[in-house]
Amino acid sequence: MTAIRVALADDHPIVLTGIKALIETEPDMAVISASTSGQAAFAAIADDPPDVAVVDISLGDMDGIELIRRIKGSAPAVRLLALTVHEDQGYLQKALLAGVDGYLLKRSAAEDLVRAVRTVARREMYLDPAIAAKAVTPAPGRIADPHILSDREAKVLRLLAQGFTSKEVAEDLSISIKTVETYKVRAAEKLNLKTRVQIVRFAAAQGWLVTPED
Image (cartoon, rainbow, N blue to C red; front, top):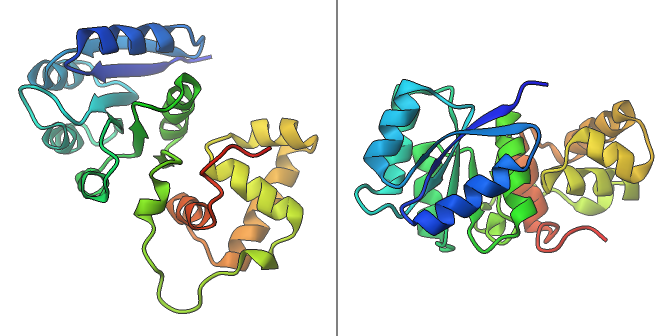
């Protein structure tokens, strides 16, 4: 199994050390660089591009949003996960416009960070459940009604939106991965959702991301 190569950028050494230790306990992840400044992070990522870069938005020497923008410009294949204390919509929208693939609050649980890294590494969007609803914008035309979904379709869509893989959902519901994908496609078609971002936004609008599924 090829490990997910991760680069870290946080100007608080203690926080950086904690994140590094957390990720390195995962058998499918490896930290290839850990920087305490934006300049050092940009240089490290340019020299050896990771699969995922976890970037603090508030860096001492450089605005984290600017760092994200620079990384996207120089190494577009790198997936970017913003890690921040900022919960207001302004920061979220700036990060999304800069090209982040995920947005995670520092107050989130450790397992949320691991899940977020895996999600963006799969080339999917991850939004912290506590802030996902702020990314919701009203769609033109008819608003999708969640009641048109079967209980199983809704549960599958909810778990996928929370960042679980199809395999994890299949194990949780005791069904096959193929069946999970069938429920996902069927639900997305009913709701006219074309992308994962739309699925996450829909789930946030329903309040599905506020707490884990029981």
